[in-house]
Image (cartoon, rainbow, N blue to C red; front, side, top):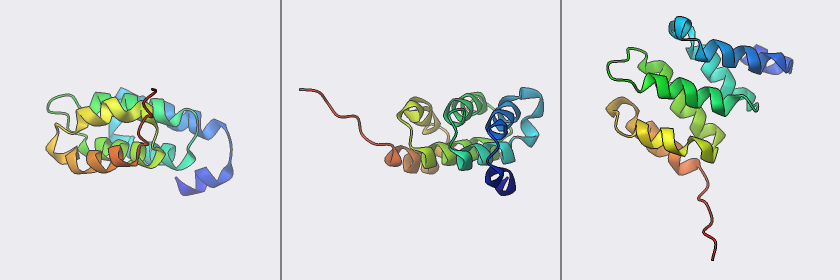
Length: 112
């Protein structure tokens, strides 16, 4: 994953997003998820949100993928992730990481 990130090829992010969100290949999604966070590409946040939403289903066996999504969204600190990270708080395996991820997202300023 690190080697791919260093290449700087713009196709890498699109490929990682496709692999991370492919429901037929969830067992192999861990590295693409981590790569998306490292790349910080425009595709990263939407792909991580989609992947995490799917992993929040009851009895989903891919908790490591879900945890990597939570951690990646925290690294990216994008406000678009707030909703799905709040949903992750309800999952004991993800709650601590979700609290940390939410803390990294800047607060929205209230307009007067």
